Image (tube, rainbow, N blue to C red; front, side):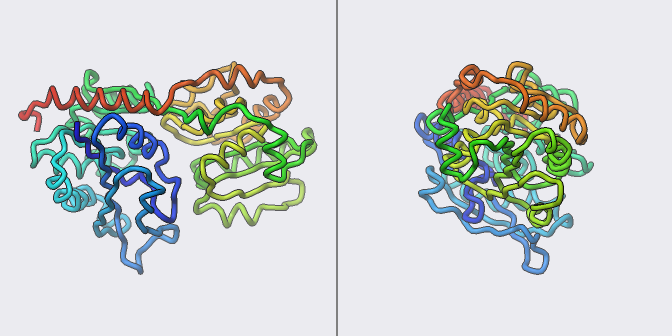
Amino acid sequence: MRILIVTSQFPVAADPTRGRPLQQTASALSRIADVRVLSPVAVYPRWARPRSYLFKPAEAATVGVDADYVTYPALPLVTRAFNGSLCARAIAGPIARYKPDVVLSYWLYPDAYGAMVACRRAGYPLVAGARGSDIRVRDAVSRWLTQRVVRAAQRLLVVSEDLGRLAVSDYGADASRVRVIANGCDAATFHLGDRAAARKALGIADTARLVVYVGRLVPEKGLRELLDAARAIAPGHPGLEIALVGDGPMRPELEARVGEHGAPRMRLAGVQPPATVAQWMTAADLVVLPSYSEGHPNVLVEALACGRPIVATTVGGIPEVVDAASGILVPPREAKPLAVAMSDALSREWDESALSRRFSRGWDEVAADTLRACEEARAQLDSRRW
């Protein structure tokens, strides 16, 4: 089967870890199907370019699968309602040249919307994939455009049961077309390891109480609450350290808080390759993800594979990953319960071997489930649906 994956959530030179779960899915899928990736990227004029924006196609060796990058013009906010159509125009030619059996598009708007328009014109079946925030849309226009994709796709792939329920209840998705395909975990990278050796490699003292966060440095990840909670529990946990692995627009704010009086030591590790992320998790006493919203955060699956307990929020698909045997869940946006949970987790004894056995689902299984959904979409395409 010839599958064309359309998604902007794919590595670029400035962010080689962008869309890592999708990259891993594409790589595994390419072993059982003929796969090509088409990544449409919005390009802004210099005077309107977001400060954090930098686009340059990723090196082929970094991506690990055949990929093409196409661009389309955009302006922040101004072209939001038209970005789906602009995306469709940019990808129409490559889709026609590749002649796929199925178009598989991750990120509902504008990527999957553009793929929907192109598929409708060319008569190809569309499989759309929702990751989390792309289906929790706030503004009315984007919500309406997203709803069109959710209702039109021959199959809708979601990473958690929570997102599947949301797609049906809030967007009118046909429940018979929804498929829950949770993320996998690369067991060759994320597995139980030697904590002392990992700490030595990273320059972490054996006596430190290390709390690790992995992800984008943005307010929506609950980082301000995390730092407030860490400050609150520091007196009761000598040697407490916070490591933030990732990058984002909050970095200057966080750098300004390094060394604050009364706060625990904070390390800004920056964006790291998967092997180094695994090293930080192995070195940790606790992995924390205090997000305001999530889909099926792969970082938690990877942390458990490394045998580390979790403190996270009760949002999205997180409760499908974390239970009382593997961590502590707290409400989002509140530093006080987060502090209590972190202190409790750091004080408890956890069975790291039991934690590491909780997830054994690999990316090959994700690829097999994805291929099955693509085959269903191709077999059941109804031209009248368009």
